[in-house]
Image (cartoon, rainbow, N blue to C red):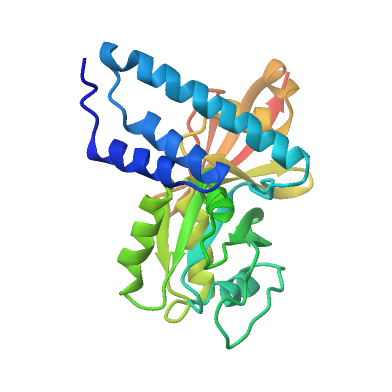
Length: 271
């Protein structure tokens, strides 16, 4: 029975055969599994792809354990965002402006040769930024596939299509935004980066004042309480919430299933 695969599947299959590294092969197989139609005629093919992928992931893990692979960077903070752009696009300058990182700045091309990491403060929480070298090597691009979001750093409009094609060729399926450090204010970029990964900021109210907490959009009070301490659900009684409504701060009493919004202030009360 024919599998009736898409053009994207066969493109990924060709990438797999042309791949020179384990990371490239893994990315191609993941794309093939994503694109192959799911019906009875593809069951055997999908099983073969999954088995091959599991074997390659095992090889990659073993190589990493031996210190032979540098793919992947441990996520820290509330989210991980990769800065991806052509050489001299302003990635290193932006990383310096938004984080505590001190990447080298130079007038020559391809100054950054390995991923540079910095922590960005966004409305009281930390977001990890990773500058990806403009050589776009497979191990570095694999970081983009596991990140929470991508910032495509452009110098002019002509860069847009080239960077989108780069994402497609490396099978990066993550939320992305375009940023231009040559025309945008760094603080405006900071706010757009934080918002791009689907987070909201909710504030915990206690005797010590307000503390910021990042949650996924649409999170209920239950998720908020669990993130503070797992036992808070067991002993939860009610919560007070303060929210701006029509320009005025309103106070209400809520339960565990109430959906929180960006900017809410929550005070938990235990039994």
